[in-house]
Length: 272
Image (cartoon, rainbow, N blue to C red):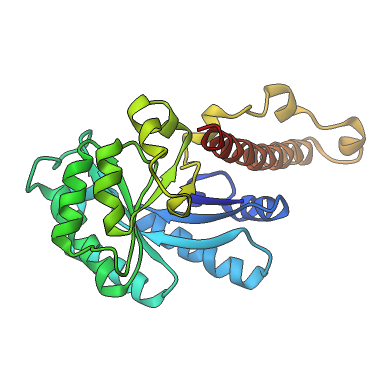
């Protein structure tokens, strides 16, 4: 089971969550969208190599359009350094999003996206793409950057395009990473049927908002520590134990919910 797009650093207790996912046979690509997250994921990757038992299957470093307007040359130099130091890393997620500043044609989002697209081609890395808006524009930008179906692949993360997008992007070697949302629009669901199975991936896109969807640890579960657990400890120690138990339950619930969400995406695909 491979989750092709997961924001591990934005989820509770990432290192422990990684271990819980590994125990469930769940692997994932850890995607990082801005400098603090790049550094967090790089640290998690280093730890996973040292631990030896990890669900981490790969990483991706990029500048998300939500922070494109804040991007500096220093940011981009740091990104390039990280990517050059890690030959396994993808680029991204990068793209366009009409909800954030700089979306207009020729704007900062386009500039930052093209920088990353060209870097992916230069380094020979796949490019994880975020698009909320005009998929046709993304395809044209990829073509102008030099994507041609030979070499690095564009990966349309949380795919929400239509049949026109699929037909235009397949000659570029595109992969299409499907999320539960990919099946909500009739136009996207119809487009999925045109994608060869070898070009399909599955994802949860889980981030800091993910636990709002899940069955959260209830207040009773959070506070509950058995009398036996607390019998021989102080009040402060009892409180600390309750916090530890709550955190542990939250991570386990997150891991279980990730499995359910990814299984749901695969199930929806198999129903097409």
